Image (tube, rainbow, N blue to C red; front, top):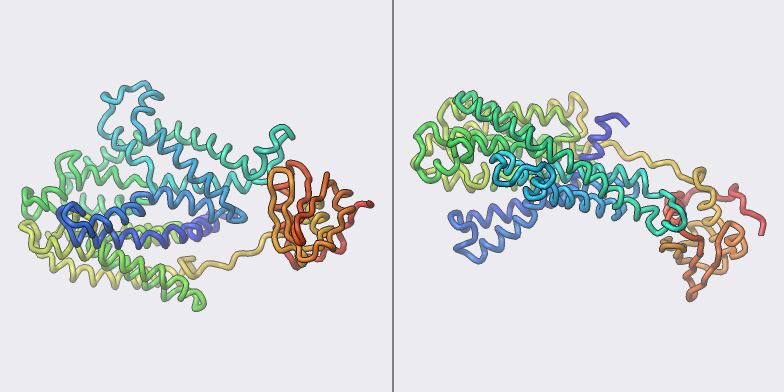
Length: 493
């Protein structure tokens, strides 16, 4: 599979967790609107909404780890999803814990730089969730039918996947312990270097802020420009009124035309470009994501919907964000946010002392909505980009009859799919429900390799075959019901 095809598979797998994010963003935004100063401290309803929303938005890494692993596993098996979550938890416990990092590197916690400490806290993100989801799915697809020696048979098949994923997660964690702080620190240094460049620096910040979201490293630049790592502290100074008029807020204003106008317009473009039969399906997700962006400025549901399936669009989006921040900063059109660049924060900041011509951001936003819509629509249609609703239909994988004749023989001896209503397994046996148990050829089952056949009630049958039971059951499920099994030879009784 080529790289674009693989990215499209990732994009489709992301749609499940993406569908959850708008709910979290809306709850957070509404809770903040009810209690903008206390974030729930002054209102019971706001508390419920804020912490309900945080339960989703603060756990994006978990959602992506499970969703990607589940979506990319060959048979969408829960063992892959569990393995993805397990791998992420290992990374969180190792890379996200400064005490553990201290033990590994030998650097006392109190001697770590602020960048190293912040890098540790930012190590568990949507990026690490997606990464572990990819790893878990890849390992599941490779090892879910593995056979181990009889003494270790219990740990074979799907049970082997969490084990090997854990080992992979430990290896990844050890690499991240040394690499992540270096990359994070380099980005902080880069941010400091461009922080004195005025409007140009704001544009560069906007470009890299968006471009780095897929890998979760945009937090490094945020520490420089909108927080207090080097004294800029754009958000706090704007809302407290302690900054400089016309300067404080230049790293915030330009986000409003992108988050509240541009990306919702991009949703409309993607909807209009979707195949007619898919518009209803994608319209709900894109519509909810657009509404969330407009009201709250939470844009991850939109960005993750196209960043993998159409990377070129994501680069265009980053360039447009850079242009927006440059224009707003250069023209000194300033509004601020404490949550994100949506309507709620825009209204709350409109009359603050350091707000400068915030109404012009509405004009700029309408212009950017038109730009985003026509640029996205043109690019999608011109280059046939597989944005949501335009994906190719999955081609069914070839049946595995030829790779596991024994599974086909068992299936035939049981009367085929027409006679089976469920196929399951435990450690050593097939657990089956049959429409007509008398059709099952018990002698043939034993000739194939069954050590015993146990009838339970009128329709349930257990076939004892040893530790390969899980693999046999899995392969039986993969044989299409339409396959003709008449050519499959059964061993003589």
